[in-house]
Image (tube, rainbow, N blue to C red; front, side, top):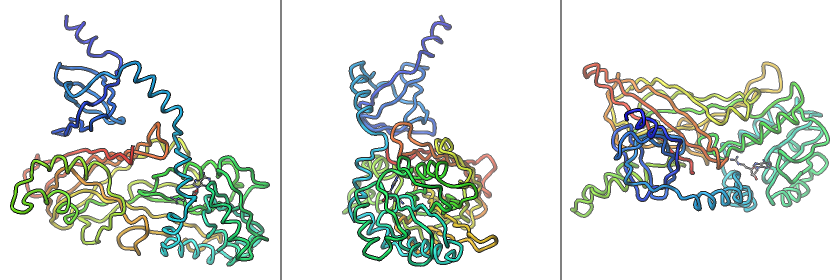
Amino acid sequence: MEAEKEDEDEASPEEYVALSDFIGGGSDQLSFSSGDRLVVHSKPSAEWWWAALQGVPGYVPASYLRLVTAEEEEEEEEDVSSEDPWQDEEYFGSYGTLRLHLEMLSDKSRTETYRQVILSNSASLKNKVVMDLGCGTGIISLFCAQLAQPSVVYAVEASSMADYTRQLVKQNGCEEVVTVLQGRAEEIELPEQVDVLVSEWMGNCLLFEFMVESVLQARDRWLRDGGVMWPSSAALTLVPCQADSYYTEKMAFWERPYGLDFTPLQPLAQQEFFTKPKFSHLIEPDDCLTTPCDVICLDMYTLQVRDLEEMKGQFHFCVEKSGVFHGFTAWFTVHFESLEAGGAAVELNTGPDSEPTHWKQTLFMLDRPVSVCAGDSISGSIVLHRNPVWRRHMTVTLQWSINSSTEDTDNCQAGTKSFPMWR
Ligand SMILES: N=C(N)NCC[C@H]1O[C@@H](n2cnc3c(N)ncnc32)[C@H](O)[C@@H]1O
């Protein structure tokens, strides 16, 4: 009988839909929202099943789930097949308006850094062939034509902004040098290989939007041997941090609003405000509980598209001052190597010790804050799982354990949490 039961448990995975929200307790239970699709891998008991949500495994209460019907699965297949996994219509549509370009151009730290790269390499850029991938309004291409003498700059832009970019090139007397090509960089044809591939491709948490895939494909197709990638390398930096004002604003608020006890709403607040990362967070240097560390480093010459599916980094932080561990904050730094051998590299650092940029930083809130003391350690890993269906999205999974320096040695608090960005 046991064998039969075993077989039944190990039936092939089935897709279920959540009938309502569930807040998982303990580190091995999955939290999910009504309507989420979960893949059930085994049913060790009638009450609790082993399932996965967006690839993240855990126990789920069987009573919250309903088997997805064959008709629903057929409908879903039609939906996904009709829906573009790159969401290009929406994505390039958003870059066809000025809002995002104004935000990027208004970001002095970002834009001046690219200007500095061109200026400090102006001599070496003479007679070079340059590709500006995702040129937007063409600002980097115009810097090249204005501050250096490349033989040609191919300014590639997929959105309808390209028509205006051509006007800006003409308006600024750069049409001799800058050629605007409208189209996806993966699809356009250039008349020649390029010496320099420059692009401003970084998204929130470095990789969101996954424009970096387009840069790698263009590198493999158009960058000549020995050519230069700008940026040349990128690093994702992480730090355990306090986020007291955010925690107070979204969670502590429910303790005593107007003298009333609204704490039954706190599970809802956790689900609504702490399930996804907080983009555009500005961390104060004092909020860092430890020295930040680079957890993922990308070499733009060797990075492959397949590497983007799952990027993993380990960390071991030593708490330098007592405080409350509310979560982790992430940001990135990119480097532009010099065209001259031995020349100084230029750096764009989006962290709290640099001028703020439009990316600011990204905050990942734990479900429950933990008090930590100087001397404690916070070790673990970060994994960026690219979304297998929605190709511009990812899930960031953080796993940590806190080893207290003061309490007895087996007092190790551990946890793991996955943050969808955004699907
Ligand atoms: N996070 C960023 N730096 N986004 C900048 C994106 C800019 O590059 C453009 N862009 C993004 N991907 C591509 C691509 N594959 N081909 C051409 N242009 C692109 C986009 O239309 C916008 O003008």
